[in-house]
Amino acid sequence: MAASHNRVDCENTEGLRNWLLELRPGGIEWWSRRDAAPVAPVEQDPAELRRERLRRLVREQATGLSERGRELLAHVIDFHRRAKKRAAQSSLGGRSTRTFSKAPF
Image (cartoon, rainbow, N blue to C red; front, top):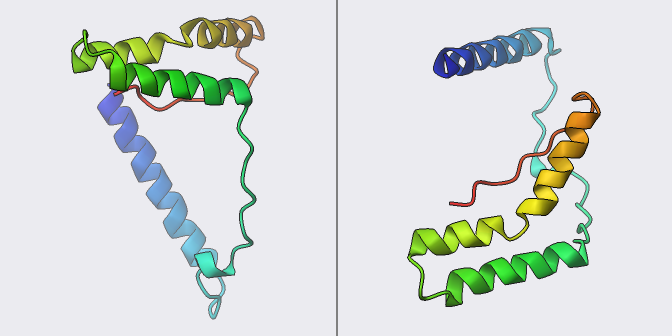
């Protein structure tokens, strides 16, 4: 089911791209990175910096655990913060913007 849903998403995205290219007037250059304004660095939350440092230390120094065990432990460091955030989003009836974090491994 998920694979067919992903396939449909890809087909729709490609169809949208092709349609937009058909509408695009001739003589317009493609966007390039050199034309973009410089990106201002984003300041990270000090608490997130501390959590990331702790996750790194767990991955490097929890030698009594397997590699997978270290990754799992590093991932659950801020479990309660993430769970609380999801609960708050659920209480809004799904109206908030959902953010995805990268996979722990």
